[in-house]
Picture 1 (spheres, helix red, strand yellow):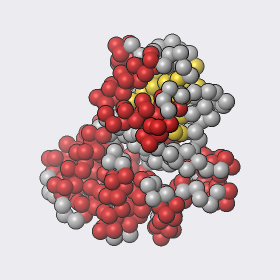
Picture 2: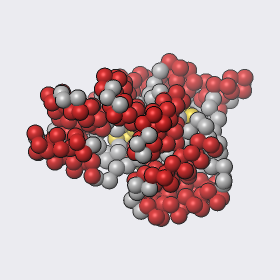
Picture 3: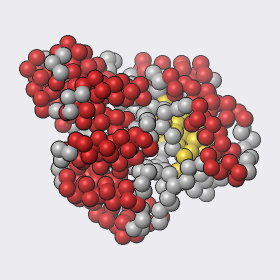
Length: 373
């Protein structure tokens, strides 16, 4: 990274300074990164873009199913899932089934963007509320990793299913899961539903307190809450994963490795913990070990863009630039609005001596960071 920054500062001082400022700024967690099936979903509040009504996803004692989907006008798959959710909302109109669509077009929403989102909502004829997530607060609260990403939540606020991206398989599983939980289908199709570990309520509460502290960069307070979560439920893997992420932020790599290993031992399918373990190994200089963990994470969830970005870094460090760029192309398809995808591509091109290509990628990252008004 330092080499890439030096490359920018030397050749394009203004661009380099802007990117450097971004990299040194506090970063929020990415992509249902710290939320898993069986846990309580974070709160959602906002204003319906069309009606101006206040919208809340409070599930206290509410019956039925709530679907929350994060989408963007620039994402083709987003438009596909909105169309399918419209069909589901109309089909289940008489049942306790709700949808909230959260638009995440950009970090800071201009009036032009707001108008474009409204036009798209009207064009699609969506029968459910749409919230514009200005500042991406809800996006970061959930830790979204790709757009679209969707949460299927039950009446007590527990996450039942959380696909990122959208495909025919995800659509079928979303419909099957919804109909099972609404009582339309028999449990014979239960095999299509992902079942997660439901932690002790006290542990879950401490875990969400830790997330709040992390978002404020109050690391020690976050770690204290995570200790309490682990004491309340020793089988809950997510606190160990989050401890690992915090230790990485604090450059305490050995402690991070222990936490990620523990998280994976408790939940072998924890893609976030596998990816975190890979990142920790990369920072420790173990490229082969890092690549193995990152590939294992992608075997669990091929949509997990943080693992794609870190795998690209491993491949680039092994002087496999073309393979690294191929991973980044995949990441760009999944998360075209993520500036880090293009920053990483710039790093790879810069290391390979491709100055023009590197500058193009860095410029695109900057445009995403600071969109024109």
